[in-house]
Amino acid sequence: RPGVPRTAGRRVRRRTERCVTTDEVTVSVSSDQADEEAAALIWARATARRDDQDVRDVAETLPGIRRRLALDGATLLMAWRADTPVGFAVVAPQQHSLELFYLAVDPHAWGAGVAPLLLHAVDDRARSSGYADLTLWVIADNQRAAATYERAGWTRTAEVQQVDDGRMEARFVRRLDT
Image (cartoon, rainbow, N blue to C red; front, side):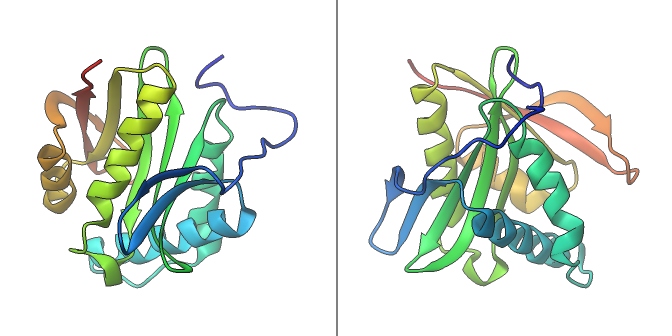
């Protein structure tokens, strides 16, 4: 069932499936454990910059990413500049939509167009999986992320929820043309 964590074994995804490519950045599906760790480091750096805090240890950020990757049908999309990971997204099917659980770009690559490429790859993944509806939750006061999603065609809804650390998240949705 979509959205239910797998209880036995790990899926094997290959980094051979290219999703989006520009002259400098390639986005591809990944199954590498090392890529999961690279994603956790990118998340740690990006959230530290966002929150003006010290970078957390990968051991703190990796479990959350792996928890989402354990969902049936979950996909890790990695953005690469040459051999360097510069961003990632984690998506997984939910009841009637594809949910974007993580999107992050290494702060060194902010402003270089990596997030729009990842969001385009998310759109492609949704279409290839038969989903026209996408959803995500983002920290409500994260204006940089909200603006990125809105430029990519996402719409903020009135729905909000409180997360474990007390902050509020806002829900965004996107309907793809079929």
